[in-house]
Length: 307
Image (cartoon, rainbow, N blue to C red; front, side, top):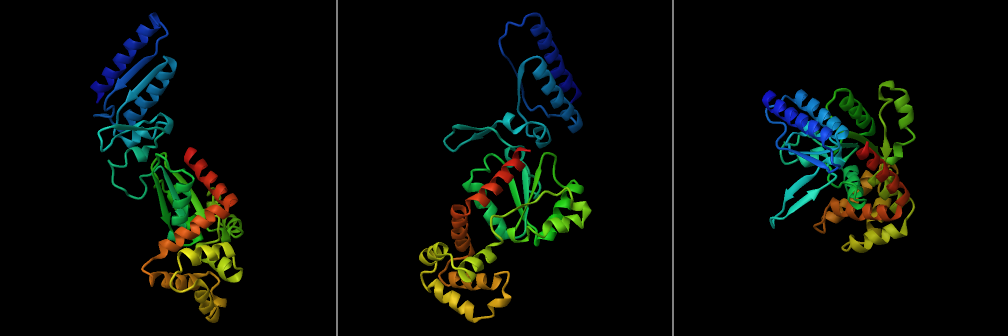
């Protein structure tokens, strides 16, 4: 490792002297292959910082190949080029590219080897975030892990534990996205738990999927949403019949909407379909009809990626 490092430094010194004496203004490119071989991680980091400095001072473009995610985390995504060999033997270049995305085929997924980790309350919130990322074209050349944690207080506590325990690898961003219905409760909770004061939180464009359906299909009928679900999903038993049976049941205690969602899900499964079919239609509806809230969340996620 030391021999390799001395060889690199000797070559750069010779290049520096030559450009100092005979700089004709032409660009100079330096190629280093497998830069991390036999180097300790701390020495590798110092080398990268030195290369940044020398590239700036001597007007060099330094390209190096690497499989080291630790090294890549010292490089801005705009300066990472990921080369993929496609099925037709052509080469695709991805840039900008984030470190965990570039090395995703080299390391096991431990839940934290990602460029961005998003903590949410449940798997339905996870699906909503996934579809927003896709529809807004946010998740390009970046590796994102969305983790349901169960309950909004648990989510905030989890965010605190992750950040204070250094569970995330260097360069990994953390985002916290909670259901909209508890937005008024969060400031008081954080103020009474001073250790959480550094946790930044954003919210889904809806309270929760179950509460959203109960509010828009039963408490107040959103005709557009009703017609969408009735036309494209509830083709065996009309949606109105499902809602009528729910109205005759103990619906007053169903403040979280889970009982209604259970009835809707059972009906959908009787047609050999599943929860994802409900979620897909509802999220599409949200994206089309809750534009302000969706755009606000999308901008929050973009900011987290670019931090």
